[in-house]
Image (cartoon, rainbow, N blue to C red; front, side):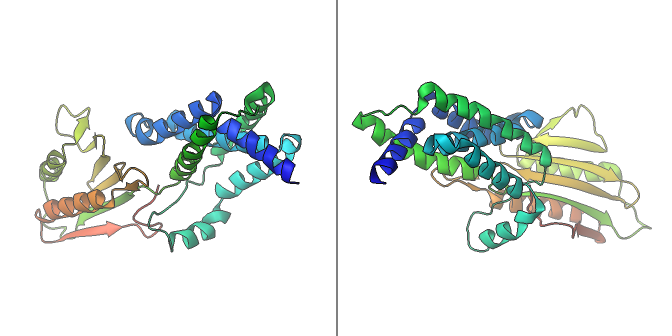
Amino acid sequence: MRAEFALCRGRITSILISWPFLLSLAVLITNDLYLKSAFPGWLTGKLSDVAGIYLLALLVTAASPRKKYVGAMILALGFLYWKSPLSQWFIDNVNSVLLVQIGRVVDYSDLLALIAIPFAWTTVSHGATRPRKLLTQKLISIPVAVITVLAVSGTSVLMPFGEYSIRNADIENRVDESSFVAAIERVTSKYELQCENCDAMTDEAFYFNEDMDFSYSLDEASNGVRFRIRVTKMRGFILPNPDYDLFDRFMRDLKLELGELSPSMEFVQSLSGPPYSY
């Protein structure tokens, strides 16, 4: 039993310092910290899931190559559970005790990431788990393991996100649309947000910088504005946390500016979800 455990530990150590593992870990970290915010879209949204599943599959397969099908089934079922509504009670309980809030989007298309599992089998079968006896390589595996835990768990950190609206309750005294746009421009300029395709004043726009993005659309029926805020800025290095303070400051300034347009302005928040969701 002791010899089997030592062999298992040796295989895991070897996979941690193999170039396929380190490359995938670099892709995961780069995608989460930069690519997702710089190039938001389907590809960067799925890339972290694929890289994360590949890393986990490498470790599971290296731990027990002869039981790789069992390990793959457990990994697949665990990922399915995580991506389903059934895991919400677990998330709520974890968030009640953690300082960093976690979350996930219920999106079954993310299960496409499971295609990474056979590639992990191929990597292991081609000798990535061949024992290495150099002490330096064993020492390197320790920080790599720590970084891997932080990187994989970091993909589930809940980012500040919200959709809201502000409307004018006084239907007799409507606010001019240009006043809404000017108020929004004052706030976005303060936070150095750049507008995408905003050569002229418009009733809808998208603003962004490396820390956050903001979009709005004017609602003629309610004489108000609907807007969406998402903060991507992280604070800290070893255990980075989303910058909720930035979200709160922007929200406060936006409500103050829009509130100055009329004493009848009402802030509306959806009851279908939390103010921070991703």
